[in-house]
Length: 426
Ligand SMILES: [Mn+2]
Image (tube, rainbow, N blue to C red; front, side, top):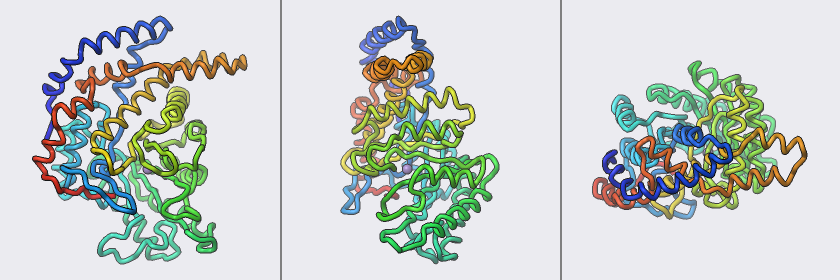
């Protein structure tokens, strides 16, 4: 299934007058404060987030999995789903694959299909957290950190193979997340685990093409509950530095202990030119993988404030690889992703409203109240007309979720694919 521009334009017509009115009201208000509204809209229109292939089917928990009808049963179907998301939101212009779940059989066909839908292949993800059928070695006691040399070799070779697959698709970066760690004190020697991991990552780094980046993701716990080899940003940063210039830290919003100051982590990494990738989701307790902005929208906004500051002031930091990393089991996955994309765009739009020169002045004057007011004023602004205008400028839907329902996308997908298809992945 593919959504045509005409279908979306026809749907937009119904809401266009209302949108124009809302946009005029907001742009007058912001304009009177000296804000360049067109620049904000252009920045929003340019902002693209990669969709991970595993978020397109219903996710599971360790207790069960409840399938969602019409799920994409193949890589081609997953690309089609991202095409639908991109047609509606004009924000999902990239897809992030996971190997081995999405190993292509026909590369040319897959590349062409994505190009037709205006999609590129963003960071590719390796998987050494599960044993694959027929694999000689098990990752039960670790992969890149394994004491067992054969298991470690297999994990390194898997990553090199993932790079080869990514190259054939036009990806330019590899994301490594390790489940390696321990459940019990005494189970492993911390230092040996870290040394092995660094050595493995260096070998993977050495195998990357010269125009590729390596993203090292961290996470404090789960699936291991006593220790994780790459537990925090500091460990990731240290490993990235050990690998080289094209190795970076990747921040996943759900991979922090409760109440961590993620915006400060982002700020520090950008100052050091080492923030490479970003995984959006939201959480109440741990790595909950909930819809972006559904639990802590103010925290998301504060993070974006630092990202915007860094994008303007830290040329030493590369352009970031943005990706949603979420998966859950009670919503239509495409509706959930539309909600996430909307929340990301809103947080970004609000952050773009902050006048950093003015904020710097209030900070120098130690005007704590006004500094806080500046942030909260931006956060409280209803920026949805700006986000809508950005989508409209690219031919997207004014109201992606309503359009998705009114155009009966899921019904059509079920007709096309059947009720009981199951997406490969989590
Ligand atoms: Mn992640």
